[in-house]
Amino acid sequence: MASVSETQAILLVHGPDRKGIVAAFSQTLFGHGCGIVSSEQHTDAESSVFYQRIVFDAAALHTDRVSLERGIDEVASRLGMTCEVRWPKPKRVAIFVSKYAHCLWELLLRHDAGELPGVEIVQIVSNHEDLRHVAEHFSVPYAVFKVTKDTKRAVEDQELALLKEKQVDLVVLARYMQIITDEFCDAFPHRVINIHHSFLPAFIGSKPYHRAHARGVKLVGATAHYATADLDEGPIIEQDCARISHKNSIDDLLRKGRVLEKNVLVTAVRAHVEDRIIVYESKCVVFGE
Image 1 (cartoon, rainbow, N blue to C red):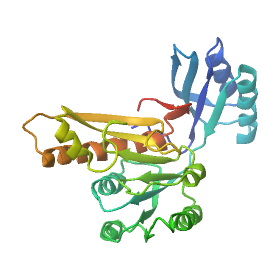
Image 2: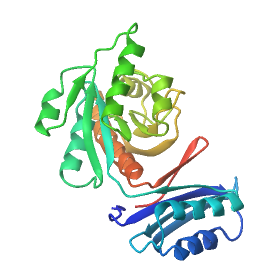
Image 3: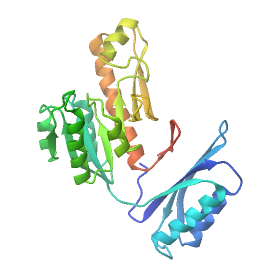
Image 4: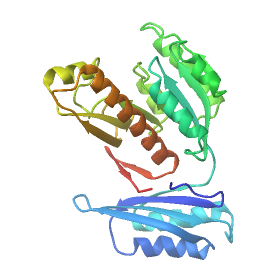
């Protein structure tokens, strides 16, 4: 796993490709007493955009964090790059869920097993009482907000107030069967991860596996993406698929789909909390573990 220690921070860089980018940021970190632990970079040949993720050890930082960030900002301005330093701190996560339990169980079990280091699951939000027992099993607060068409905005404001109170960094929609509003997305830009039960945009909407079965598809898939104002069109973080045949029933598709959904969602959440994602325009660059 690509987790970092309490003394390590991450620098994310992207912008127009040009000579000297790697050297400039490396020298800046070195000049402030920070050793580079690992570095991964990529240049998109079509757009000529450069991406880099640097893990550096800040234990021997000669100056304070503000001075280092100023130095990085100066280099970024000179090179026309966009940069962000992610200092080590726990990521506070809220999970939204309705009645499907498989993704919720997977996140909580993986977290309980220590497979999501640096994560604090501080709240579960639902529009139903059905899964309260799951939250209680893991001693996570569970709040129910009943939603109707007429009360949606008012209820969502209550949810946002709760998330602010809990200082939530990331919202995970673990098969939450409600459409969140533009205002919700704006409150958590690229910090709401949704799991979708197909390769987007195929078979969106209700009963996707039933319609996939009716069409005789040969693959079923799942997609984890950032939720945006454009429904199911946010930047894609992770996808996976499973092969099926004419021998498979709808129940087989549902079973295979559930496995894909929970695994894809956990993989996406890990990539986010480990600061391995750079969002650029409509896509994600996801660095390796």
